[in-house]
Length: 493
Image (cartoon, rainbow, N blue to C red; front, side, top):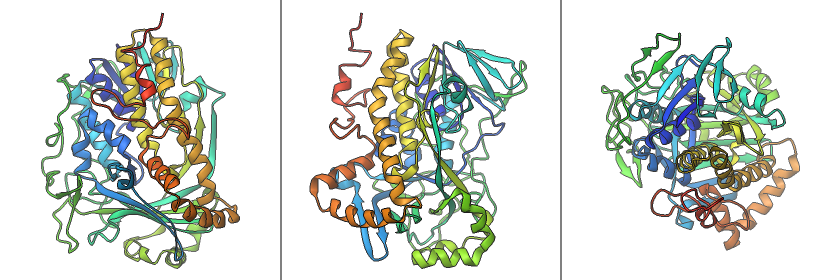
């Protein structure tokens, strides 16, 4: 099958790799001439890690990630919750720099035979044909996958009735070194009421770079947040965008650096493993490229960002330290407020994510608040599920319907839970902070509720009364009721 994918983010690249590994002819279109990730650390949940494992990419990500065993939230001296993955037998989460996941997926394209066109903005899709901003048809495909993010213009044109609301709150992010590993092992949050939330996410080692590893655009030193040694660009004589393609050579192994990885940086196995993630001593002395990082985030309403910056750096220091004294080690490396990157959130609901030959996945189909840390994981699950249905179901309409049916419960559960939880942590409804500080600690004392809270973190929940997703042996990641609905076993007229 000939598949065109619009968007060079996690959803698009993961889908491209999954489809190519199953023998499909895949071409990705990315509007940015030199694509790179924006943001800081993300929390990769067990579900997302399982998808990467199936694609043969987990080891490279895990070797540059930090193990996150516990999620803790404090309100002053009161513990709101402290939940550990291992309480329910789940694998721990992975704190990972966006640049690492981007680099691993990016470098998996060429060895798997995926063609990547950069500097090519697709603005219209019609019957499998994709057109750029100049109205030039760039390709004709059996299937077009729209994976161009939460602010997808294609979604708006193809599905104008889709829900797309901006959350009033977002977060300011900053990534820096954590040589002493003060923030290791725990995603820690400090809250006051519902308007103030400060967090610290262990972020691993960052991407492999040609020179000294830095934390990205928020670090005080030279910046280089994405890999500088990339797959060589090849000029396509038929257009003015950069085109990359490599021979299809089967699934990509994960035993060492991929083709195209920098060779003048420390190897990914330089650190010692601790539960699957790289661990380092607390005395410093790390080799270049092997310095642990931490992502700092500060909740703020989008309309208040300019006023916060106008107050100046010292006022920001004072505000943060009054709530989270442990932030001192981060703040001393913050050179200016310009180093803080603001990220907003959107709430996107697309009830039927497909029409004709086009299907929408990832944030383009179901963007949500990151309160539960599930956006990247849901996108990876989308990618693998779609690749399976397109491979195993020859009827395109049935493949799209089967994909949507398989993913619907998991997507909707996390959208609902995220939408419901967010006001308790990020809103102007002050009373909700008190409700949270009262009810959450009580819920954590009830064994059933505590187990469900932990399982929600894992990313596999599908609803209060539905069984959670499972990972049986072989090529399957699904709940028990999906087993009888897969294209391999389903018998529809």
